[in-house]
Length: 268
Image 1 (cartoon, helix red, strand yellow):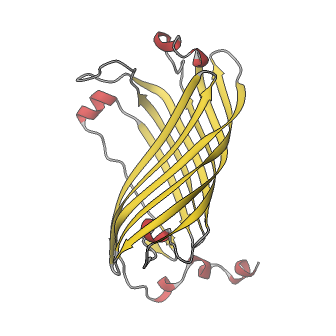
Image 2 (cartoon, one colour; image 1 turned 90 degrees about the vertical axis):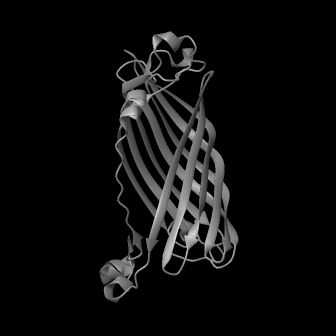
Image 3 (cartoon, one colour; image 1 turned 90 degrees about the horizontal axis):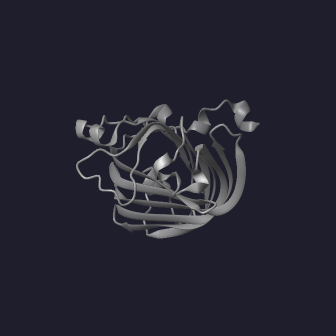
């Protein structure tokens, strides 16, 4: 629902089937997402927490048998970003991702993104079990590890428009400064810092007509880090399908959120 210039969305998770549970186990998940888009800026805030993960060892065949699982392992991801568009007069980010505008002609814009994120893994025992600890001596006996990064990433976004149909591609990449904290069993936490890269890729395609709209959206965020000789790669993907129609705005619904604020707040 989009009303007063704000967009609201409620989602629920689908319960995995019996075959999926027997093969991968069950993950408890909680997610909170907030995003904002204006003509020149867009940003988002994400809070994710997952408990209970499955994993696989390279070279081992898991066909027709369950993957190893760690019910005690918790993964959290907290991130926020703000992105500035340099060509808002000929390009709209709200057209392919919010359906609140309609871009008539194909066009793109350079952009720059500022982001902060924190990713952490923790377990009741070592994250790497004894069987594989020798392969990853840098992570031996570590029960929790977290990465907090601040970065800036330039990029480009382009909308290809054909009548009411559109295709968008957005990509940013840049350096990020990370503060790393890791804690081994029965030892105090140790700290490290490093520079590395973060990437953000968006793809959207669909139809944005006068009354009806709909489309597919895919987003991928990636990062890479090093802990001595061990390389840690992360990637989070999200996919969404949207369909809807527009009602004529009447009366108070023609107003925007700013118009509803008390006059004192608007002038101060």
